[in-house]
Length: 142
Image (tube, rainbow, N blue to C red; front, side, top):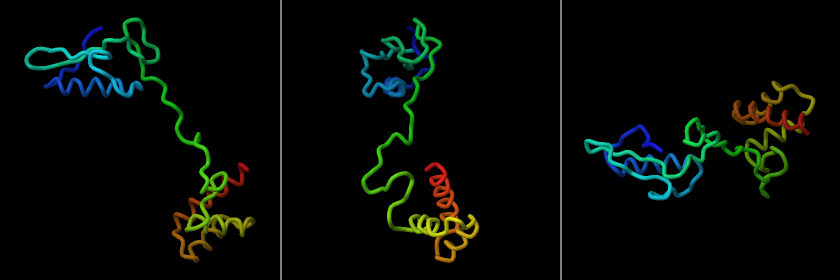
């Protein structure tokens, strides 16, 4: 295994780069001597080399041709919290909840009519438009 091509001005910088690399692979606390080694690279510069085979997806026996491992899916895996009702429905107070309440009370009204009613009630037009669309999508998916 070879030293990574970039050289650093200090051993501390090379160590930081190696740790950052391994943290990107999902290793929480990479250790010098276990996962990587720091080596002089000439003229007062330093580099680092992996001491274990790269743990990346698609690496060959030399650790080449590897990409980053697949990241876990983000977003909607979370369980609903107790203070938030089912689906995307907002909490029971605030302007977002007011928009949803108006949408519920005017199910046959057009988007424009609902937004106008919300603005007349003192709700920001952008909040009204965004929350109408979220309400509409929630009704469509329900």
